[in-house]
Amino acid sequence: MPKVAIYPGTFDPITFGHIDVIKKSLKLFDRLVVGVSDSENKNYLFNPFERIEIVKKALFSDLKLDKKKIVVVSFSSLTTDLCKKYKSNIILRGLRAVSDFEYEFQLAGMNRKLNNKIETIFLMSDVENQIISSKFVKEIVKLKGDIKKFTTKSTIKSLKEKYE
Image 1 (cartoon, rainbow, N blue to C red):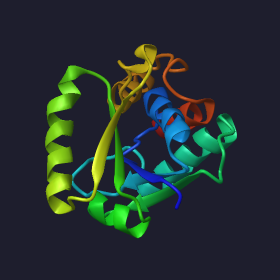
Image 2 (image 1 turned 135 degrees about the vertical axis):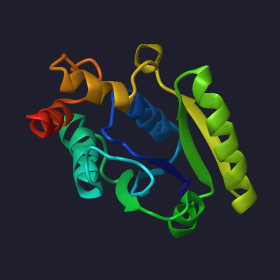
Image 3 (image 1 turned 180 degrees about the vertical axis):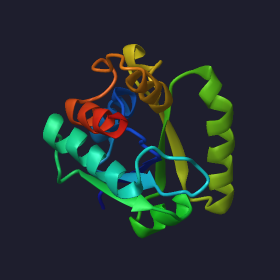
């Protein structure tokens, strides 16, 4: 049976930090479901459809990653329900800094309480990408800064179009 992992996030927008986690996961799992959260408790720059398209362009057009190993979906349910839907018992989470750990630790614990068959695996992006956050990328582009060290060409194009 193929090993499937779920990588949930807002991806507003996707960054090289997210992409590091995705690339590393492809070495560990047969299939990856990138779950683009449609939670209503956040104020997004891009709507769910736009975020899915941005992620797909970044992964498949810019980086030429394997479409057979990655599926990009929108979800508004619990992550544990997404796991059930895709027959996965693995939730992938990226860690950048110690400041991420407390929140991620609590989230992993809550998911474990919701379904004790699900494990959360933490992956760190490479050192040069650990400081990148979607929030900072949006702020830099809004102020007309250069973000090519932080995300892909198609994502940069989408961000610039949003702020013009």
